[in-house]
Length: 227
Image (cartoon, rainbow, N blue to C red; front, side, top):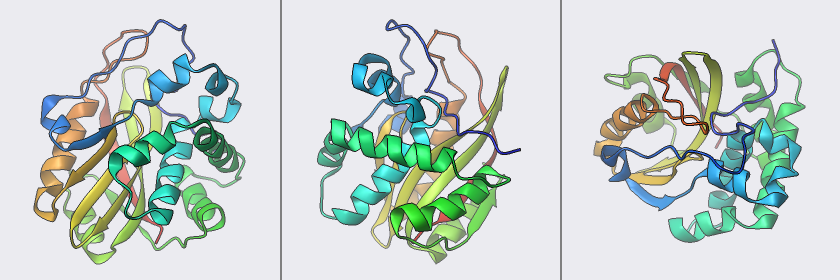
């Protein structure tokens, strides 16, 4: 069934909301903080953007890839500062709308279709990870396919069945990972497994904008190589 993208932190809530804290074990990898929930809920301009209300994480991840592609030498802090600008959010809304309006049978098929046309990049294949102790398939895929990847998490929990989208860049120097819910991260090649384990643990601590704690688990994580 082809449905609009939905992200965990894109809930329509009053201006008063609960923040979802990042666990300390994951925070050690963070190089720049970004919280889409706070941005979307507190900035009037963003509340007028209909597409990001149901697909902020997808649009933000594509915006992060585009910015990193164009400004490779930019610091994480400056990249996040850019993503917080009005013009960047308008670009994010465009990406979210383009993605939501692309008609394919699955979320994954839309990523494969939208990445080349919206970013000018190719879809170079996908691997699906379900072993969260080793992340073996994902780590091998990343080693064999340097460059940018769109990461799609298929999530489930009490009252939740949805997808969340992130982005990453990997090369011989290590990995940069962007999660719209918490920010940009950096780790060496040897620390990638530790990072992914902590990311998995982070989603077990999910707290909704209304303050409800929900244990979120990964049903699968897809790594789409987009060049």
